[in-house]
Image 1 (cartoon, rainbow, N blue to C red):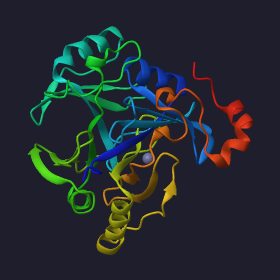
Image 2 (cartoon, rainbow, N blue to C red):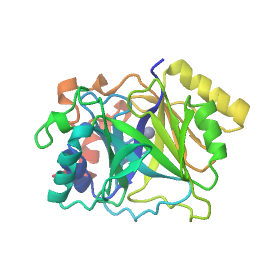
Image 3 (cartoon, protein in one colour):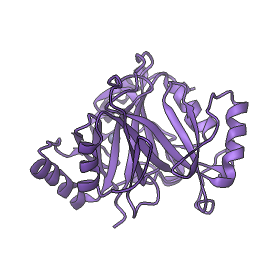
Length: 309
Ligand code: ZN
């Protein structure tokens, strides 16, 4: 069973062109889908990932030109971490310096070297240097050579008042198991997952609650196949008393959503059908794609979307 781990992370950004520039050029990720927020089609929904946009490689954004700044706090995602090959740490440190991206001195966490920074909207992301992943394929279009490319998501950390109730959902429903503890962090692993395999719960009683906005994560999605998703939804409702939404068709996956007990919005997304459903794999992200229901409104939608530069 490889349908475990994190599927994608979705966050809120400021101006779309700045967001695109940072993730595509500075970090060298592939824009694998350019579409709109299905619930607000005057806004882009940009998907960044690896060459194919495999589940576990995806970070997506709703960029709003004038979004108010959010505040990271209790009940929110504190950091989104990506995997890089161990030998690429020097490349990335140098790259961030020369691009003028403020970052922290690399530090150790759970025995791994972490290079943490903020994106242009103030969202905390990190590159985690890992041994043995250099032979995994890396996407490259121009500036970041394939050998140094990001190899998908490493994991996320959640800032919580009390980690117990969230841990129960992560382990009992989402298929993770407790792996390690360090200070106020507890790490959970989805053992069968290659990418997106870690969830760190950060016990931080007494912090302010988070406030959604620019620079904050909107939700975290976990992987499942169709049956697994139904099973998880049933388990949430029947054994944990947590209601889920009905299944929503997100064109590239099918999703149910629920609020976990610590306050973070979680999604369970299917691997199917993936990003090559409406454009060829070698042209991912090049054209504005709209779901069928919005296609008749393409002209109006294109008129209000800001230029991506
Ligand atoms: Zn999502």
